[in-house]
Amino acid sequence: MSAGEVLAATRMGGRLTTPFGRGGDTLALQLVPGADAGSAGVTPYDFGEHLARFDRPPEPRYVLATTRDVAADTTVTVTFTQPGGPAATVIVPFAADTPAGSSVALALPTSAQVRVTGLKVVPAPPGGRADEVWRLTALLGTMSRLLWAIGGERDQLAGRLARVATQRHLPTATGRSLDLIGTDLGVPRFPPLPYGFDSGTVALYHLDDLPGAAQDVTGQYPGRTGHNGVPHGTVRFGVPGRYGTAFGFDSADTAVEVPTDTAFDLAAGASATFECFVRPDAATTDGQVLFRHPAPDGTGSGWLLSVGDFGRGVPRNVRLVVSDGTLPPLTLFADLSLPTDAFSHLAGVLDGSAKVLRLHVDGVLRASASVGSLGAVKNTAPLRIGPGGSGFRGVLDEVRISAVARADFAPVLGEADEHYRRRLRVFRRWTLPTPANL
Image (cartoon, rainbow, N blue to C red; front, side, top):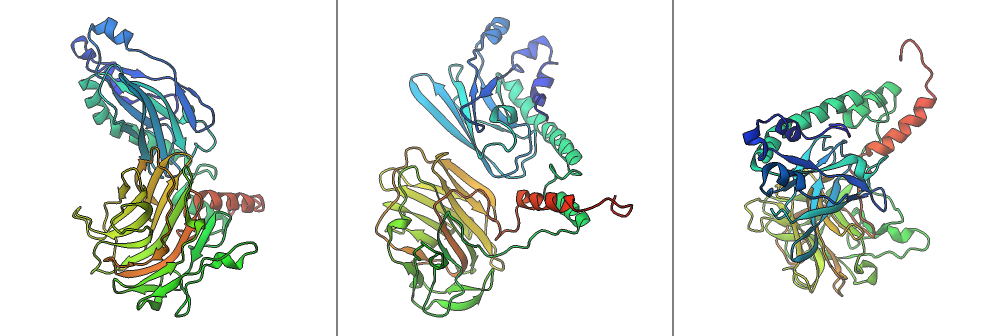
């Protein structure tokens, strides 16, 4: 699906005979550039043509589609107005590697008076603008919705075909195709590695310490104060980890506690990322793996990253809870069961600028929600690594707390495509063509 194409539902609806024309009618909304590359407005519209042709008001449902492959986990916030109420938003997540042509129905009220007014894309489309990359279409009848469902596969296949045609070229290749180009140049990807320090890091625990310690390695850098933790209970040290060794937690009374510090407080509108590697035991019940919260039930101000069933019928599920203590807690579930024989990377991301909370497992966006008017998230509780009185049992490694909303998790999940592509460009300049490598 290129930038100039339309949904298959629109093409098929245009071929319907007159008796079915009303149900198959669609309206493509006109997007215009917004205040930045990630924003777009919607030109004011009405359904006058539909009324004139069919003498009946439509029952619109809106569809959001991407005209390019989605390179990174992306959140699109669509703004709309409705009769008798203020402007509202709906959040739509798109996972990394979503192909061009993919579309999602928006959960908006079914009313001819609803009007979509704009959208905000985070992160902004690389090398383009939101109005160039995204499409909004109003499906005005039941038949058009049926055609959208039928034609969705055709739209995705068209996007896949266009994507395959780009995989031979360095600027557009991704994933395994990019690795093959690197193989031709003799430049492999960097393997997964433990985290290092960067300016967005608040605290970083490799958890490969000797018994009695849990060092925050950020304290080794000039101008930074480390937030070292104190193990409580019978924490097992030297357990095989995702990188080197890790800490094992076999009972409810075990945890690493980092004394309370305002560095872990989150002001209203701030961004943060909480992440770690976890290998749960089969005996794990509902419990925390990483949290800063005064109450394990999630009441009050704070956040919790947890593993358990939580009454959803998914053992070793992942839950993220964030609350400012006044609004109802924001709760996300990954709704997948973590393996017990391998480490999984968990990350909760609070994006203050986009007002979105995201939950990632192994780098894949699993759930997201609007944070609305979330206030400050702060308390006097310590930062805790491990169950801290709850039902988690297992091993934790590579804990990182950041004051930024992370969009990717390199290098612990391997070198990201864009960084690898930049390296390949450098090496390509130094590779002379020969009959053997043409």
